Length: 210
Ligand code: FES
Image 1 (cartoon, rainbow, N blue to C red):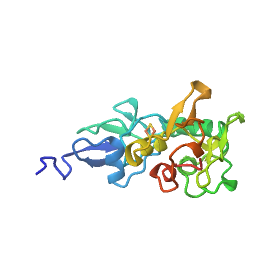
Image 2 (tube, rainbow, N blue to C red):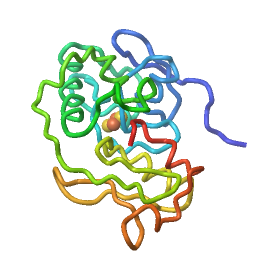
Image 3 (cartoon, rainbow, N blue to C red):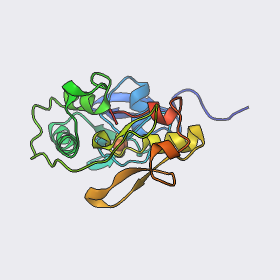
């Protein structure tokens, strides 16, 4: 029998509201269990956090930190919906929009896209930055699965799902800086030579339209 408590042990304050948490939970997990939305992109409740997008950053006792990696503890004072925090989140989101092909009206993931949802939550009206129009390879080599890297936000959810759920390790992140990209682990680097299947969790977990 597990000794892990299943009822919340204590609370922290999130935007003035007491949030109960279980031992081992992060601020993000406790907030989600309490029905409070903290904008996020690389977090998924089925996977260990990697803290890469920083959209979920909150102010904890005066310091900024990713809420998906920060353990909850009793008495923390957490701010999430502050104007300056949402301003920074909006700038991060706008950078993602100009670095890729995120033209929502033409995307089949529209209305079911985390990037779009975050933009709506932040009341993003424009992209602020000049569009970068970088070149991203599209992989249409596979009969059932297509990869459009121009929509990839490098959240690594497909990387984690392929490795941890599908047991295949189809995807990885390669390159540096602005050349960082999602790569396919196959001899040719193409999906057709990988063992990806349309039923894989990695194919369905993408939070955007990649
Ligand atoms: Fe926390 Fe991406 S959701 S860093």
